[in-house]
Length: 192
Image (cartoon, rainbow, N blue to C red; front, side, top):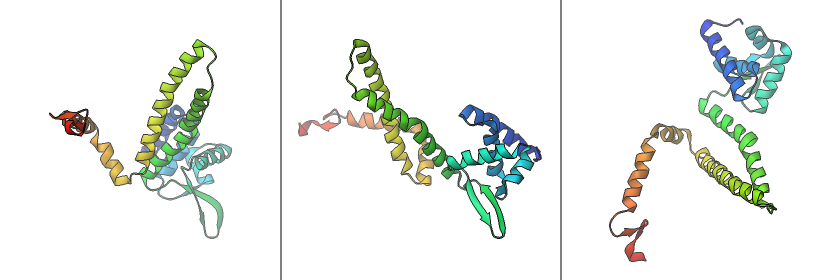
């Protein structure tokens, strides 16, 4: 690897983490290199800096493009393709979450819906469907939450994430307010 020590440490770590996230080590390293690069890089520059084969770089770039995590750029008078990551870190996070949802959550929800529509033939299948219903409801809850959060602009999203455990205090306050004297289950006793 022909990288400054700080960059090399990050690239190597990201490669290791990538393998834990379900992408191969080289793809993780390519992404990390492009993320910290001062300018877009072409495949030959990536090969030179990482010391990996041209075919690995080509396959890695295709995978990153399929995930919408790198952008292709061209330079006037240069036929080579140059690659970069989005500048906005929040756009990267949003893209990662969206792509993982499409690849992991959506197919699972589709399968769960199909299985729940089937008529159970045995007690074992009825029990299994009851458990699948719980999983389906949880996945639907997450999908709905994700759809709501996805519509937030970045400033609001940052505010939401910085709330942390303060959200629990807000919910506790709401619970206390709905139990005020003269209120039944969140409704005024007079409205009954």
